[in-house]
Length: 282
Ligand code: SAM
Image (cartoon, rainbow, N blue to C red; front, side):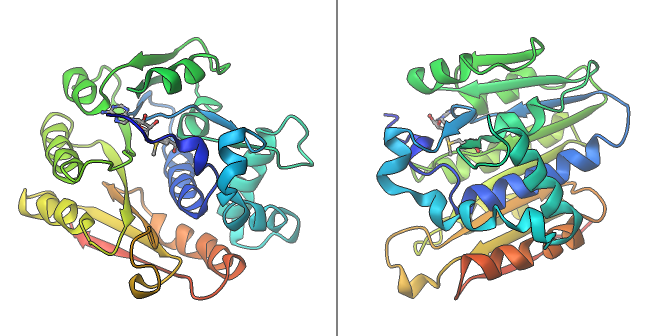
């Protein structure tokens, strides 16, 4: 059963961390002309008006993207954060006001070049319908179906380079291992792919199953970044942090993100923290 809808959480601290990491990876990949296929296995709606009924219910963006909006003017966080906020401004009908939050398909969709491909999977019929209404370039394929299965079926791709984002809602605890199996299977077919996986930091610590399965499966060059908003003890049930792992991370990713995340941690308030490093080295 699919009950999760991302509109309730759009623009929260986890989205900021996830999309900042995604933006940094895409930015690096687009420096070369050679074509890329970008596959988003759990695409969501693509764009979230912050005044939508679902989003105003929890208003999580108030403790996520909203406190960062003005960092564009003060130019905190180095080039990456300023570029990310500038891109965010371009997603607004009025670039002076933060009224919309773009989802993962947008960060590549708005930069897609003639030589690139983008495939977006979304299983929820309502979310897929919203996604279908977004004005993405004609080359963007929106597929109503299971993203993990779809990814396996479509590999290898025709372009020389591949970037994958796997961003499930982890409504079922089995999803951690399903994601790990899919990443291992995908890497066997596309050794050089850059694969990003988002995972929640929850007191139950199930993300460790995902990370350990990747290491035990023999995967190399696995980098991670974790943004904790609270300590597990303070939040006994809910998500206390956001994790991103990147297989085959672009050169310099760790440093660029560490610089960008410093003001994010500071602006989102105590007791936040960010740490990153190799989970499995080369
Ligand atoms: N990636 C989006 C973003 O960053 O803007 C948010 C995605 S949200 C966390 C997870 C989405 O995956 C939901 O829209 C949900 O309906 C969808 N979903 C759940 N299971 C799926 C599956 N097996 N295949 C594709 N989509 C799925």
